[in-house]
Length: 134
Image 1 (tube, rainbow, N blue to C red):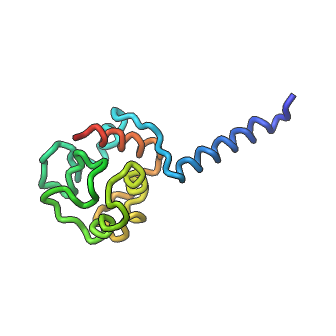
Image 2 (cartoon, helix red, strand yellow):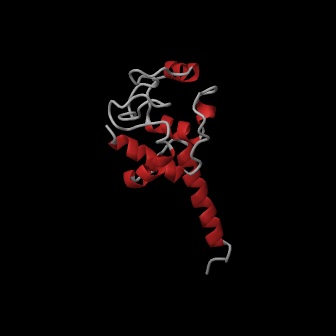
Image 3 (cartoon, helix red, strand yellow):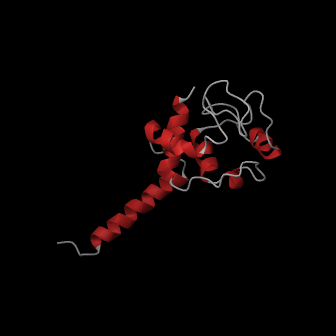
């Protein structure tokens, strides 16, 4: 029979493995319906209705896979323009996950005042929602 501490040790090992997958950029499969609910936090500044403009933030319809700072008719902050110039300069799921977790950390000096979504599942859900909004 295994010692009583074994289940706790296994749980700790599983949690560590899952955390390392998240750090490595492995995304959880999000739920777009839950993501639509979480996205309510974003609607004050962003739209996912194709072509809708005039909001504080850029339109996010089709943002997954789109070049950073490329929504037509939106004037981006220097922080987002600098992010666009880095690496691929594309909103991948991993880049969106990092940005949604802590916008200021990813794009120092961003004009976006939102503090971020701390829960990985909420970020995955929002990303799934955004993938479906084209």
